[in-house]
Length: 122
Image (tube, rainbow, N blue to C red; front, side, top):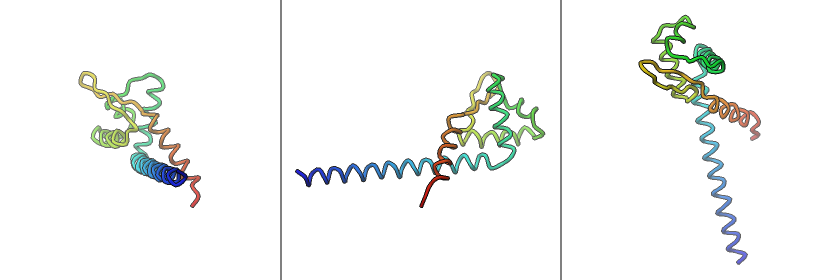
């Protein structure tokens, strides 16, 4: 019976390690994806603008972002597309407009993951 418990314990430990590795891999992918999305200063400014408008309960659509920044509509669309792909921004269509909302949950996951990596000791 003692041998069975060791084998069972060993299997549990191996499964937990795999789950831990999978979680670390997910966090690595999240950090890479969000870091890439925030790598351009314009995207950081756009994200901050969307967050502030959301905080003030002001709806934000593409034309609002174009009016707030000195970029073409096509450039704004490309930057927002990158933020949406990273899940930092969510889009909701209403009538003929797409409205944008900052996904604070992803930002918090990103910040927590980068914090873990900064305290990692090899």
